Length: 532
Picture: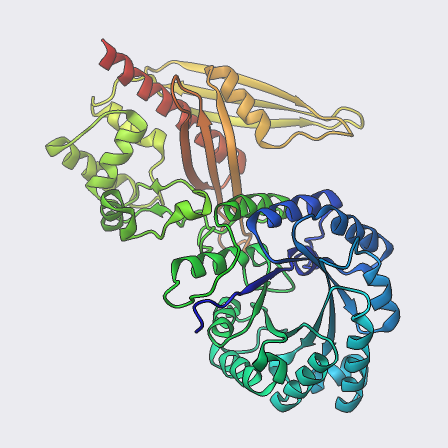
């Protein structure tokens, strides 16, 4: 592979991601995503499909005007009126790219257009020539290319590049291909198509993830010489989505020995993009999603905890490259080791334990986590208190309820919680939330207000992720709530990242807030003891 080869990145989150089922973006959301993509440094932002509707046309026109430093692209159907209409969204031709997609497999040509191979080539030739007068660059898409006759695909590429196409995009439209097939196809096209061979046009790939191979196929294409890849943030797109921008960026950054190409991508803004796009789409970042999953820096097994606490590189790739997307988490479970337990106690209680005391605690933890996924911070601190290791006022939730009063004008809810302290006392907290027809209140805000006011703490939420899957009546569905928060201290804010698993979203969130309250109380007690 050419070490000096420039690899273009075309991001189609605003077009392909926008058309994914249930993921349509508002104009405000599209403008925000576009600004983040500019900060990331992609070469081209595909903003939409102008001819789909008048609203789409107006949105694309605004986006093309607002994006200042990056090439903008729109997709058009292969008809002369659509091409002319689509090109009207561009504010200038210098940074504009018209992307025209035509089917090249016999199945798609027959079913979608009712055209023969020769008829399709004539259409492609005419569309390419016509589009060249309306944009700075023309990209001709070859839909369903991986199921097309390879010789016919090469002929299609030859025709469009000889008639003005700057880029030809071969699409693995249904995620059908395997990496070896993509590699062979790209190598063949790079060799047989004149414009690819002499560098006057670029070969691009657009891979779908139906079989989970979008990343592998895109990397195979890079290895085989393609000049552009098409991606989406978080991999969102039709059906199972597309090759994820953040994953490919991280792979290229981490493995320059395998993929020695140059891009203009900046990694830290990708972390911010991942968070904001997850919020915009309402899609929780799966615990196990590569690069951006909430578990990528979470360690529950003792041998892993020991490794990362001595050197992060033992079990983590450089997470700081993505702007420290998620804090490192040492999770106490039945598989945890003494070093992990010792670290968590120091982190949340402010004390050090070792020797026989640590051994005894480890035995107790093993017993208590045998049938539970994790040991929460509050439960751990209460265990320390029961063993006379920690002397701090700790609180647990005894009961919790939400009563809702329906009203046409001012619906409201009343939260009630009974808290039990480790000295045997109890306290009741209430929080009323009133809604109106114009402005809603997020579900977590009342609970946060209840805890902050009742316990006089200043917890600031950074991120909340909730995941649940209902699988039927046979097995009750569990809910996972992940929280990142900070508490202002006399020096730097103290950062918390933790999760709980159970059956009530609101109760789990309340217990996570109590974890922070109890940790703050334990740390404060130890700080006072040291000062005395």
